[in-house]
Image 1: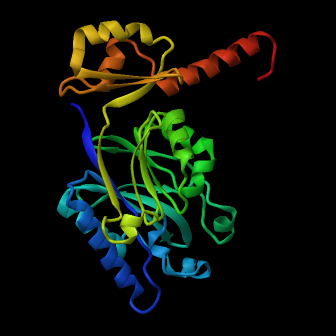
Image 2: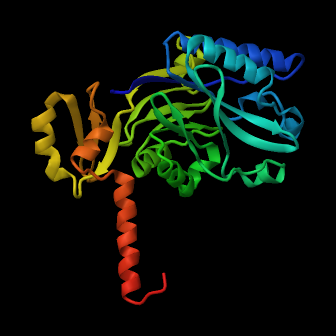
Image 3: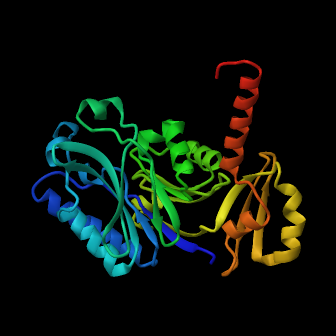
Length: 317
């Protein structure tokens, strides 16, 4: 079935330090999630380590939250009540270990997976934050979803791992905006990117197209005319391809399926996206039927052919 879903990102504003900080933070998070829930999203994202917004850096380790814990439990209750997924990024204390974590909460309020920031900054590591070891993609009822956090965006191996693990949508909670690098990731690795940053958040599709934005840099948000929330519908039944070895199949696909499919050719990048708009035929079905080769699979095959011919020529690679 066509997997049309609504995703929302919350540019969560800072909570002032002081008495009852934890309870005020929890109340603000719940209020923002409830506001986002009015659009009936399938997935809502919060920014990186939003639970630390009121603490100076040196106090972070002593004030990290646990999963489960009061803050997590409040978010899980909202997720279950509105039947939506939440990307819940916090500084997490897990026993004697400290992680910059993005936890995915399912529609039932249960944990479906945790991502630990693969490449914390040098300062984070020196402060005791342990790096992650992989960039997993977690199963949801609309496809595989992964995450990367802030500084991870500078490291192509994180995007490569997400693509290899099958992520169709990547949530990117961050303390910095990211800008055009989000479009590069979307195009290079073939997935949607939903960023979540207090200053400015974006949704980018796999062709590198910016679909919308919000954040406290917007005058209308600061003035209270718009909420710090962006929401949009995307089709998860969509994939990115290179033209090579695929474009000669366009006529046959269009002849059979017509308006049931959507082919967007992106010139001059030499790639295209294919989406299914049908309930009974998925883009994976089309890939199988027409022997299509997705973007990352083609690039990996090209890498393999290169190595093979270098080895045949006597190079030790």
